[in-house]
Image 1 (cartoon, rainbow, N blue to C red):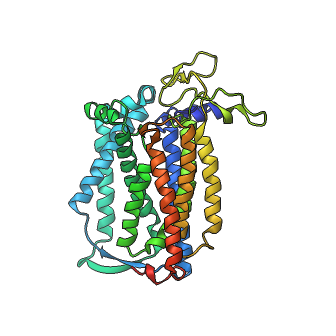
Image 2: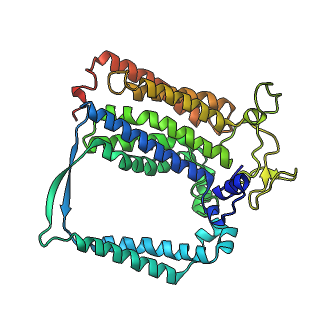
Image 3: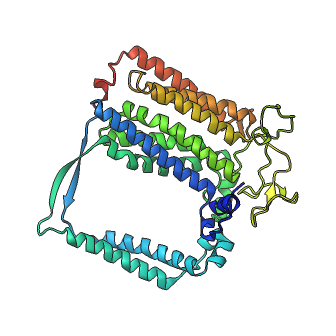
Length: 391
């Protein structure tokens, strides 16, 4: 396992770049996943716009204003944080990377570096605004194409997805919430995320964004659905590479002869959570992460990556064929529900209702909603991406 990109690069290439110890491998793949989701969404919105299924929306923009006080303050805050931690990190790399989490949460930093970078960013923003300032600022209505919303939609999904994932995890594990209240730095805010909580919150807020900006809701949902599956597949690579705890139940059964051992059962050495027993069997041991599971488990993140790649391919091939608008979205809910329901049978998770886990309950609901939605759309007899979408 590679808890950070530093460990991966060092092991695979021999290149030693301690600064990369700040780049968590799970976080790296999550960032790649959001980039992919944004790209596929923008591409689909552009395709639908080209077919006349979507129209540009108008936004109000004031041109020629000087830099506001709030703009300069935020630039100063951003610059100070970057300079405070960044300059200190450059000048004291060995010390800072010895305990990256401790350094980031500490008061260690270069105060002079923070002031210099803050002043630089404030000046650059002021200078940019001054160059474009008009004697009389004017307000204009500017068209915004649907595909130009891709990045904003992705950022909306990322923010609310994280909030939902954390809240659902705490609902499933109230003891962790109490520990967080007592000591917010104990486990780290990024540990413990529930995918379905993120999906529900992100989906709700993205639909709200669609409606607010005049993007047809069903077509917008269809455009987003394939990319969500692809992004999820990439995100699960991060779970596998870092060993973040999203693994399966113990699997000590003999493997089929045609499968490699790592695809059948795995013990996650150097997992990022530090779970298990000390690693003493001669394998590489990374300081701060030197543990291994006492018994091998099903590597469920790999299974989810493979299955979701296939499901993405299915939706991508069908996206131009299935009508009416919304069908791809409801098919996504159904397929995603099936995938998660069955993977739960071999995953480590908390039972919340009898023998049912939170994910099994939600995935069952998604399958039902997916089927009901496709039936409803079919018998509603809407025209292809038709008048119902002019909200």
